[in-house]
Length: 494
Ligand SMILES: Nc1nc2c(ncn2[C@@H]2O[C@H](COP(=O)(O)OP(=O)(O)OP(=O)(O)O)[C@@H](O)[C@H]2O)c(=O)[nH]1
Ligand SMILES: [Mg+2]
Image (cartoon, rainbow, N blue to C red; front, top):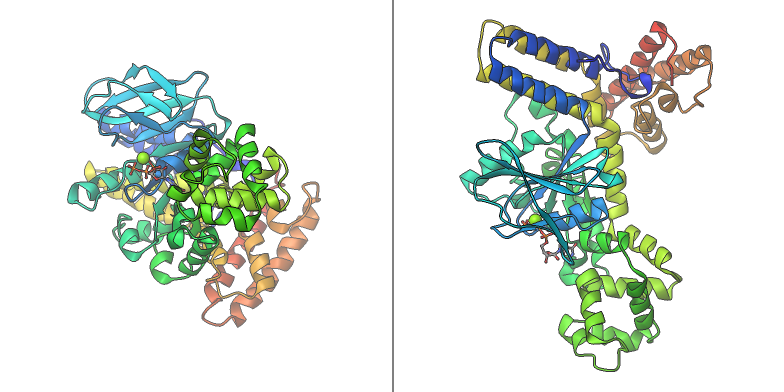
């Protein structure tokens, strides 16, 4: 295993570089288990995962719109339908050629022919004893992030167990629910005790899905959904299970990313009717279908629009065209924004992709801990101690928690301080330059002075802060001190 550095060469940590420490710990565990080939092979897989792309699972309640959201995130119709029960978990990754592989419960993986039709990808002849399916598809979106589409989680015991196993497979999770109700959130597998529980929410974002259907799909459904998510994100039952909650319509988001000229033309055609005249036909699918010649669109084009955008989407799209979206690109851009998908993509980029190393470190630490318990040996206690030591020094986990609290306004810091805290804790990027908000060519002595001044400010802040914001101030102070430590060790290179 090659030793790796934090991205940008200037990852900041409490006692050192968390990913580098975790890398060393994995190598040590591999050495310790040298006489146990199965355990060692498993550890090599963990090490491979640790160095690989972010693994993002899309999971949640049955029918919550998971597969549709996978399509929206990829920007192509990749979600797989199979001729069996369809309940297979499926990984999507970038590849030169489209191909599909079956990983059976027992035995070696093998390839199956992949078909594409109007409804997306189709795999024929999938047997029952499947662990998972692996689909490679040429896509830039899948280059740095591998996506996992999962079957809906049933509330049964088997469902719980499958869910628990599945969550170990991913570095980060989008948990979809149509309501964000406490009952739905209860399906997020509990993490038992210890440090893992304290970091449990770091890799989860909750999504109020199919947001265009919120409030019975009324005109302002998307707005209502976003308000519900905004309110829910501050409530304690949600804060303990995820970093943030957002609302999104995968359906409209997917349509936005793949909008065709003929679809824009159809919406534009509808928009030529005065609002008052069109509105009654958009009250239900049946009315829209039965609009006869009032709506100058042939039945099959109406069906296509319904299929692609849903009633709320059609209503939204006509409003957007009337208010200035005059071509396909403009309408697509506006739909993307209104669907909530753009905001979700930003959240994935900020909370997951930019924090890939920390999230992967968390999963690798869990893996080593798990193995030490599962395969006890003379050195297990030592390994567990090492995990504990790395976790205790990992300021990165504190930073992630702080950033989540700042996003959802739970950190107790007033506006201007919150903005600075976010930056110093790495919310705008992990390098020293980004943390200090200075250009990348800033000379080291200036970096030192800025970091020193910030540390002084936040030391005072931490001393004077009330109980609500003290913890936040302490974490920011630690971030400043880590930067000073880093700078004292040498000049950061970009
Ligand atoms: N209106 C609306 N319908 C959606 C949206 N997302 C999905 N749907 C519809 O909901 C149904 C289920 O969508 P899927 O994406 O297959 O949901 P899923 O969570 O993958 O379902 P399972 O895998 O069976 O658990 C389909 O008919 C979709 O067209 C959405 O954002 N808005
Ligand atoms: Mg599905």
